[in-house]
Image 1 (cartoon, rainbow, N blue to C red):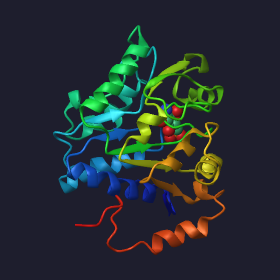
Image 2: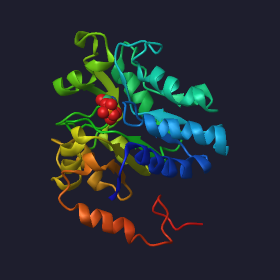
Image 3: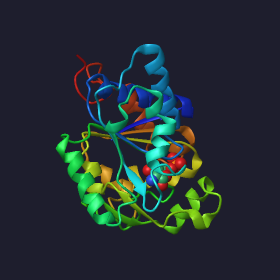
Image 4: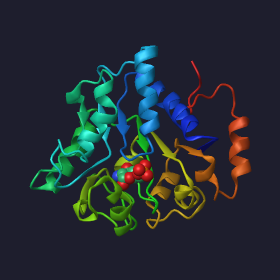
Length: 264
Ligand code: GLP
């Protein structure tokens, strides 16, 4: 894993945008996460679109997950979240911004169709990820099957309580979601996980330095050969080998781009 430690959430967003931009400029498919963490990244990509001609025309974007039972236009649906906070503010074609259909009466069929859709466009190149305080990615909660494809998940009580802040009452938080499975996420060419704040420190330490275990679903990324984790100092604060991660970045060979490939 490339572990990049930054002083501030703004710098996390800058570095993440540098990585996403590589794939966008190549016209490749991107995977998008919801939650508050990637908002700085999306703001920076919007700025680059307006000021630096970064164009999203002609590319596809796939959301990681969607609540079951929220209409697409509901304020808290991820379909709407990603449009309000990112894609409608750049030149994405709306019909190329995809998310699972959380209103399908047969959500397991919607999950299979979504998986097929990702496969049909040739897979996701860079997949933006946040992490839950319990180590979930997408909505893959502890005990998730490590090789699963897009599927229906029951949200953990911790996630229900973490996400209650976005709803007017905790009872309104949907109890289930359709999420890309851990196996789907592992198929992305380059998972890019962002975390800020002390609340994520334990999850980051478990993911990077703990055992590979379904108890910390994010630890499945240890199996991937091109993962970048960008964290601010508070989120990095529980990492035991932090000096090595800093050294790894400062000793990075000049020829190696942030995507792990030789720079053109
Ligand atoms: C939700 C999303 C995850 C996200 C997590 C963390 O549960 N399904 O994709 O990573 O929240 O959110 P935040 O970035 O707001 O802490």
